[in-house]
Image 1 (cartoon, rainbow, N blue to C red):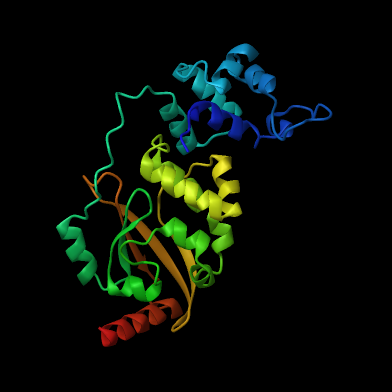
Image 2 (cartoon, rainbow, N blue to C red):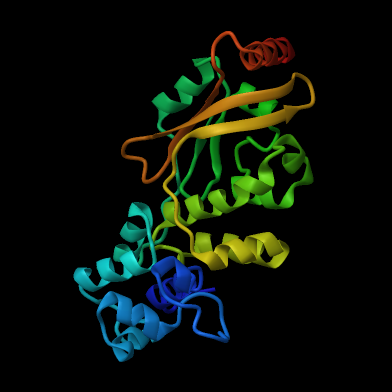
Length: 273
């Protein structure tokens, strides 16, 4: 599933998400596709319509940063999406090397075992590379070898655990695209995207949007079968020198019902081990 023209595909996807009214243009009558027309993007960015067409068709893949910044403004991209756009136009330095096996640093592995909170290590493709017993007690899918995207889109039990999962899908796909960056055509990413595209209409729709969002912590709600409702913070901490690995830790605000429920989960986990 190789993406032969990532820059053009991204520009096309993003202009279809911007309505004429968003940029101060009249609707302009019947439109065959949603969003802006190519000539409208070109006019607003201050470039010729022919040149913009060449960008979308892949006949010019390395426009200047000035042109890309102008397009980012027209397409209303935030900083993360603009950085992603700039990265798509940079020439590759050579043949893509085979992905290295992701190994969790020994110190991080030891840390998650003694931290006393649900914690796991997430690779750049959202694979679970390490997890402690509390993380697995929180969600059975947080086990070594599982993939977070696959679990959220394809596992009904995981969807039951996260009552807001439908709202979170778009953000998760956008964060995944940011995580893989311009390497969306490497074998691991291609295999995973192909599998999820074939199995999930939701994933196909969201992947086609080309949204980009940085990997960062957020608040999340869970409906746990043993300890009930939980409102937790999910922190994502970059592991230095690990090529995109994150240490993910769940914690609750002290003194809350969620903190007490999390402590109960810890007691249950300790008793079971």
